[in-house]
Figure: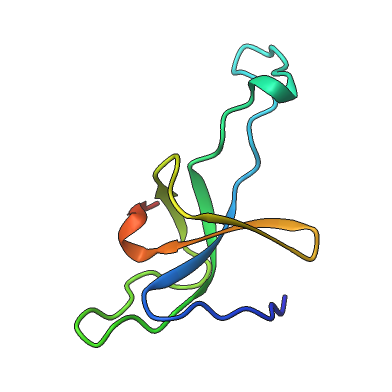
Length: 91
């Protein structure tokens, strides 16, 4: 998949995971009650700063804060762009 976007410095482009549509017990969650996902896959990453190189790589699954990043819509898909410091963990 070729994107026409390249994050700069310590920024990372993330494709959020799909929101859960069913609970573990089988109850279907309506659209207005779905929670914003906090997990996603790294699609592109910048080179980092001169003091701190980037530690995540394309394809990593990461956890991030609920309100982290800026939402983007490219080619009909939703993405988040955020600083690497907003990423909490690599799963």
